[in-house]
Each structure stands twice: as C-alpha cells, then as structure tokens.
Amino acid sequence: MRDAFRRRALPYLLSLPALLVCIGILIPFGTAIYYSLQRYRLNLPHLRKMNWGENYLKFLTDSEFWNTLQVSLAYTGLTVGLELLLGLGIALLLQRSTRFNNFVSILLLLPLMTAPALAALMWKLMTNPNFGILSYAASLVGFEDMKWASDPSTALLTVLLVDIWVYTPFMMILLLAGLRSLPRQPFEAAALDGVPRTFVFFRITLPMLTPYIITASLFRLLDSIQQFDIIYAMTQGGPGDTLMVFQVEAYLQFFQATNIGKSAALLLVLWVITFILSNLFVKQWLRLREQAQGAG
Amino acid sequence: MDHQSTLERVVRGVLIALVLLFFMFPIVWILMMSFQTNEQILRIPPSLAFEPTLENYQALITGRLETQAGTLDIRFMSNLWNSLVLSVCSVALALVLGVPAAYAFARFRFRLGEDIAFTLLSFRFAPPLLVLLPLTLYFQELGLADTYIGLIWVYQLICLPLILWIVRGYFEDVSPDIEHAYRTAGHGWLTTFRRISIPLTAPGIAAAGLLAFIFAWNNFIFALVLASADKQPVTVGALAFVTASGIQYGQIAAAIVLSITPTLALALYAQRYLVEGLSLGAVKG
Image (cartoon, rainbow over all chains, first blue to last red; front, side, top):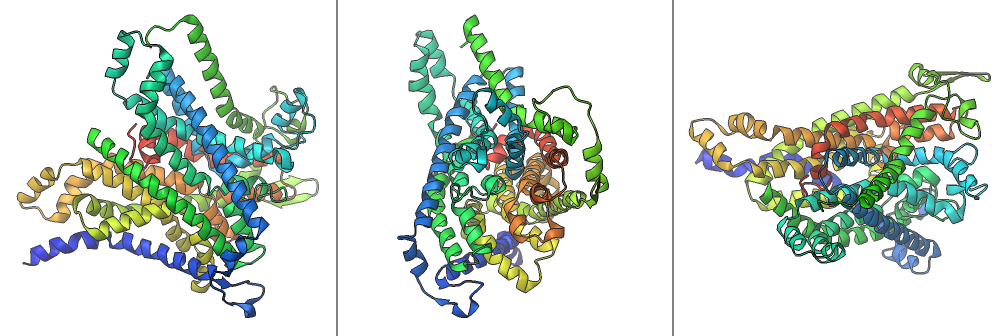
C-alpha cells in the first residue's frame, strides 16, 4: 500500500523542481500581460492606470510599430532564406563522409559557438571605417568610404553578414545530418538507371530532405524574429530606426523611454507570432524526434 | 556520385576553400589583431607581417593599462570570472533539477510531466525580454538585482529545457527491463537510478551539460538586462569596452579571443553531440 503510493507520487516529486522553474517563468509572463494593459511609464508613476487594450490599439496608427514589424520580417526573411540556401549548398558539398569533409564541417561549427554579441563585435572591428580589413577590401573594389553599420543603406547588409556568419553553420549541420541519414536504395537505383543528377536532386534528395529543411528553418525563424544580440551589439537598432526589430525596440522603450506598458505590449505581439511558429515547429520536431529515437 | 570528373573536383575544392575563407577569416583576423599594437592595427594597407606583442593580453590580465594619459583599470578578468561562475553554477543547478525530471518524463507518462516539459520548451522559443523585463522590477523588490543567485535562477530558462529534452531522449533509449531486473533483485528505486540509469546515460548527460554551458556562456541578453556592473559576464563586459574611453582596439580583440576560446574549445571537444543538442534531440548526428 505504502509502496503503491510512493510509486505514484514519485514522478511528481522528481519533477517538482522543474515545476517550480515553470512557475517562476509564468509569474513574470503574467505580469507582462498585466503591464501591457496599463498606461505605465516609470517617469510618470502617478498616471499609472489600467487602459485595457489601448496600448495595442495605438499600434494600428503608430508608424514606429509598423516600422518595427517591417524591419523584423525583412530581417527574418532574409537571414533564414539566405542561410537555408547557403547551408543546403554547403551540406551538399560536404555530403560524402570523408575525413577532409568531416574536418571542414567541424571547423564550421566555430562561428556557431561564438557568442552572437561577440561575433557582432568582431565584425564591428573588421568593418571599422578607419582600419577595418573589410573597409579596406571594399575600397580596393571601388567602394571608398563604406560606412557599413553606421550608414542606413548598408546597415542591414552588415548585420545580415554577421547573422549569416553565425547561423549558416546551424542550417548546414542539421541538413548534413539529414542528408547522411537518407536511405541509400533510391540513390543506388537512380544511379543504376543513369538518371540525371539534377533530376535526382529535385525528385529524390529534396523531397526526402524536406522534414529536415522545415525543422531547421522553423527553428531559425523562431530565433531570428527575436534577434537582439547581434543588432544591439552592432548598432542598438540604429542608425535612426533602420534596424529597430521587436526586441531592441521593446528594450529601448523599457529602459530609455521607460514606457513599460508599450514595451510589454510590443513583446506580447512578438510572443503571439513566436507562439504560432513554435506550435508549427513542435509538431514537426516531435515527428523527427520520434524517428531519431526509433533509429537510435 | 562515386566517379567525379576532374573539373567537378576542382569546382568542389574551390567552393570549399571559399566557404572556409568566409567562416574562418574573422576568427583568424581577430586573433592576429589581438597580438598587434595600436599602430600596427591602424596601418593602411594592413600587413600580414608584424612583430607580435603580448601587451594587450598583459593589460587585460593585470587589469591595468598604462597610457600617456595615465593608468586605466580594466575589469575584464572579473567579467571572465563572472562568466565562469554563472555558467558553471547554472549548469550544475540545471543538472540537479533537470536529470531527475527528465527521468520522470521518460519513464512515467503523466499529464503534469508533459505540461511542464512543453511549457519549458515553449518558453525556450518565447521572446526572453517578455520574462526578463518584469523580472527586473521583481529583482529590485526581492533584493536579487545584485546577486549571482538571481541570475543563476534566470539562466535556468536557457539550461533547463536543453537538459530536460536531451536527457529525456537518452533515458528513453534505455530499456526499462534492465532497471526492472535490477529492482527485482531487491534494490530500491534510488539505488537503481544511481547504479543503472545514470551510468547508462552518462555520456548523454555530460554532452547536454557541455552544451548548456556553451549556451549559458554565450548568453548576452539575460545579463545585459539583469546583471549589475560587477556581476557582468564577458559578453556584456566586452561590449562595454567599445564605448569605454582609452581602451585600444588590440585589447578589445584580445578580450574577444579570451571570451570565445572556452566555448570554441568545448565545442570541438563535444562536436559529436552538437547536432543532437542543437536540434534538442530531433536529429542524430
């Protein structure tokens, strides 16, 4: 009797600490929702009151908000799209498991393991207008005086480069694992029949790789739409509002404008986007995970 | 696939060389910069031949920079120490909290378990500021704003989902029959867990711990928002360098090198497990 009780209580006991962490997360999350429904500015504390959906309604006519949404979507679309293409290309280059290819793929992990904030700092040094090696290289091919991140017309390009440098290896490593786990028979059959390589790629490789492509892309979409480290370390959202993505804008609203209510509302809009994406992702991810566990 | 023409081999070789150039160049360049004096860095055109100097590292390690204008205190070593304390303690705590929970989620199918596992997973993908900004206000009230403990607690947001989901997969790979047999031989539950389940999954647990360490070390936003000046890790500290007056470019480069070396070394050491860890167990390498 006592044993049966202990057995039933056991899983709950074991997961108690994790539950506490969960609650520790959910409380500030609830607080954020509450703040988002208030007029709450740290500099005007006596004006604090509930204003329900007003913070959200104001977004509709707030050009700052639309700029944030637009910049975030452009950043996400460009990074994930380019990283997918590059990552897939590199994975195909390294597909055969030779010693050299494996060595290269291990080296490519290094950018991914560099803290993104520090990676941004590295590129900041390399694009310094006075002595940066990339500024020098640009001047050699005719772009004198390239201002990189401090020029609105090249700021996005500069942070894109950093993001691509850090995260392309993520796509590459997942797709490479996917490529190498594909069954061999269809490829052997196609080789025997002399099927052209482009046909094999588009009709066999790509369709079989699709679950991996979707998983890796959703993973990156989720991270990229929340990008903070690279942009904040590089330009703090500037010049002007060129790179004012969601989290950078929310951070500045909180700490500089001290408009807590608006900051919280911005983050909740972002949360809704990530929540939808993450549900799609988890479905896909569970499917792959089951496969991986089965194969393991 | 098996018979490549010479042309194809050359094209492949060139492409791989370009890929390596793009991805390795920044690391090599910053490494070189960290051994250069300011005059060497500012030289145009940049030159590959230079007399390496240890001055930059010396200034960081001794914490003192002698310039014509006077002596400047650099607190980089304390940033490095903070990074170490925060990452090691967070991972240790995440392992203590996470491994038993991962075991529970793998062995017993129960509603609460799935809810916890998926809540943690979903917050892994939620905007971190959503939780961090309200926390700054709570931390001030609770007096946690200036402590390691508060930060280590918040770092669980990064470490715990990782440990839970990766280690859970490893426990699921161990057949319950083995544990059952050991228990039938008269051993208690805890002994079985310690003597059988943990040793069988030890490599997986170690890998998850290493990865969690890397992510904790590389984290920027948590400490930027919550850490007071004397608790800041390298990611935040190095950024403050850029705006600090008197610090030279070579020292920034040296600080970057010292900050990224630990994670890069660990990544090379644990590379076999990275694919699995990065995909939270969805893809096996």
